[in-house]
Image (cartoon, rainbow, N blue to C red; front, top):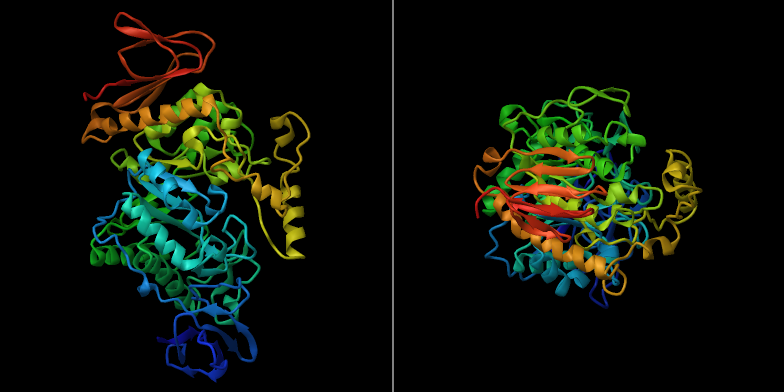
Length: 583
């Protein structure tokens, strides 16, 4: 049992409505008592009790810090006691996000049931057996309706009820740790969704001093900003402490506009480090940033923002454009072997030079001595697949050899590798954008999606008229599901799955101390579309129509190689690994 509290610094009166879980006890509406710091203190409530707050006669509204919204984002909150769960992971030492083979998944589409509990068991064991070291869950914060990507969450402390609620997240993390797998949670602090966002009813959580793609910015530097700053920092630490989360992926941090002396990210970095010290295990913060600034992962003590790692979109763009030949939109500056080589050696292609898509100079160079494991790279993720007009994966158009090359070039790179669910076996089912909004917002979202993809060269890319899937149509969601009886199967998927196991086994050679100093990364071509990534384990990919001659002895091959003296021949659409670091 604990007292209910809420931050509402500008309110004149706050009333707490409580509906006890225990039968026979009547609902109550009690005035709350204001404290000096803008917080209001209310009655005592027990786990399972439902409650909401009425602010100056408006409402009642759910608790901004509600852990549980069993009746959706507009309903009463429910008291949840995180301390009741019997954890079994006392022996879990934790895992740093840097260097961890990461696997991004969407809970609702990863299994037929679409819940956290449905992943526990065979699915977790299978991922662990395939070398996955960290699972990155797309956002779990409660959002309107039952299905969605989660980036329009409005109850940021709650776990989406359709996924199983807060108790299911605790069970999932505990089970993952039992399999030796860490858990990263995708969190969105740069905005809240438009439906069910009641924060503004309680206080100055937002400001019109800054604009973002979603409208008013979260208030990080204007009068009353301490409320929102505490709201975000407390939320992040709570996931790590009450739910044993190992890492947080921070969505689009470039939209966190903060002109205060200490940037929110620097404050969060310091507070997270303090909590990690107290818990005795590493806690990581992984930023998604469009800025191409190494300052993002520079320690706070050295003038940086202190993120553990950041996503490196330029590596994705360079690899995707090289493999597919796509050069539309933001791929305009990518596609050549030289650009791919620069991305692998320097991380940022746009590192102070002109970005034609942005129409301005962009980014800054990454120091040569900066740890490359601070950069998360991928050939697919939810954005790069789901924000295509049809949600089509690279595997739906790439040859088997190109898919095998993509896996090896990501997993055997000097960076921290991340796969998108299904990529490990060449899933070809799409991952599309889907929502479940009430009207009139639902129709507006559908119309906006159609309008968004009216241009951008999609018809030229797909070779004809494009029927953009309606995000509100439940079939769009169902067609995005993978899992038993749903995901792609066949000889090609079996071959890709086996290749993945070979690549994971070879990966250990890239993790040896000094391996990348002895064998620096670079990309070169022996002939057109005959590419080699040099490193501790060299990746040779023949994406041409002619045989490729390679020196050395292959430790693994995708396709049939012919050994010739001190080398071998790679036939078209095949890949081979040659270990340069001694086993």
